[in-house]
Image (cartoon, rainbow over all chains, first blue to last red; front, side):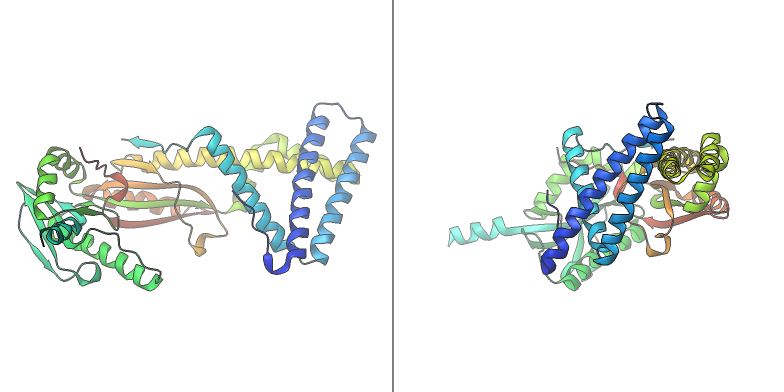
Length: 103
Length: 266
């Protein structure tokens, strides 16, 4: 299992990896925030504050990607991370079975 | 000298293309991989389609050469199918160490199983069916049928910036789940529409998607074993689905039944 980083441009590759990881963390935070909002554990002020903070984080990440031309690199790292995660899940659960239906 | 002859005997092999439903001794000519002479080795009413080779795998770093080999392999299987009806195909590079006698003994040992498999695929062929849907159409279908999504959309438009951001994320997460459920329901629905026209239907999880369909969402892909008498009805059923607004069907075949043949040596 490995994540490929662009060796031709180590700075961009490393920055892409960091941004991809922050994006993943941001998505986890957003899911948690939505879950708490749905569960009624946040009041209106907290929802507004949390929403603005997450929106600012998203805008900052988008700007970093745009300024450093990182869209393709981040997408590639995210794809690799998905593959690593899928491989880990497959190893834990075993290979997916193929369904066969007969008429 | 004897040792040398012994090594030669060990290195001899037969490249397997298919098992056919005929006991005829037949020579196909030099149409095999690397222009090898292809012929049959028979036992009772079945035969193996082979060429003589060394007992070692075909390996190359040259992509063009590899493509040529695979095309030749598939050509022999197609040719065998045209001559003798549906065959039991082997994957590329299946080689048995030994002589014609070895193949004959293998046929004798596995005769009942091979004959049964040939009977299973007689007058049938494999087809591939892929169903696609326009993702926008899919989201529209889901939003129209899900009251909660409709309400979230309205709430999002009326909220302040921070709350609207979180509600938008909530909407997107729910939409993703709803699309996944809708895709599963559509797959079951489409499967039930073609089931009566196929003999065996197998979910195909490794199918590639052509560039033509890259912007669309794949609902499901199936490998289908279809009797020749049913193929027209299957084509008509798929045509109806293909004409539905936002849907597309990719229907390919006929092929030798690679996905439906189980051959294990006993």
